Image 1 (cartoon, rainbow, N blue to C red):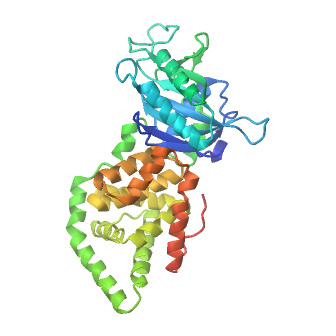
Image 2 (image 1 turned 30 degrees about the vertical axis):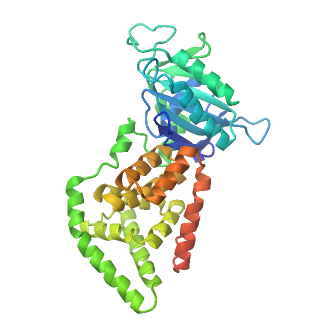
Image 3 (image 1 turned 180 degrees about the horizontal axis):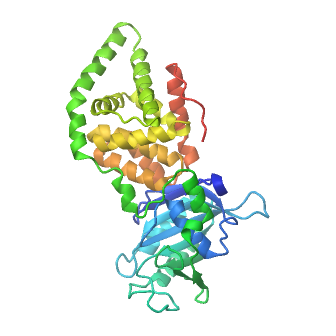
Length: 396
């Protein structure tokens, strides 16, 4: 989910199916600030921590001890899994536990909290006209999950269930049948307010995130119609640079053109179809593409990310993979694990052999922390500097 406390919260979140957690957000929200003693406060913070309102999900928060022995632990990482119960997928508890234990080992966490969000859930204390007949089975799932975690020396310190995350919805403990309550208003959550304040939208469903990368068929055809011209123009510039004995001049000029386009995007100007084609061709230059990873930690990160998102919708094949990989990396670095996983998967679907997409997918699956992955951005800053271009300081 994210990293830090209160308004500066940045957490890491993982969101995915059973066997391969794809999205992970690295956030360190203060457990004290979240009032973990009140499960309702924790539950209503979940949408902000994963970036969307989860449904039929198991959400696991990993706790990290505070440096001060008297301090409250922090929620260091949040993982979301598609929820399977009863006979839908019998091995699910073991698979959930294996994935969570792997992340705990990476993060040095030994204690977790779990929240089940499922419209099929049945409260132990029925509330008239507030629930439908459902699958149930969550208590047994959590019991098996807790045992599997214990085998890996990880403690399940709390587990709660709720049918949906909205004001006044009942929640109940899956470890103590006498512990239950109702949710406060999610809109009033401190974590939600901080998330929105930092310009991070909370989407109603995960599919809205997935739809962000849906190709625009009509505009893709328009951009494709300009690619041949863009390739020819790039070839001419490269040939001229080589003939002048300064091949770096081509990389420098191409990177500068990319930065001008990002600046235009930041000012609200939308690229034309020809400009999008030029951008796609520019990213075929590995030196330029690798340098642009450096933007993910600078002041132009948001504008660059918007451009990568738009470009990924308008090109196909390796061109789409290049743009989606830059988008996924930027999201990963700032702790938006769900979007990172979706973007990286889109990149791999577009080009299964894309080396950087494969690398980022491995990082997500193994639970590598954003601060470790951001080293790639520093490499990008160095590549740009070697070309004589200052991408600015690391501001994140």
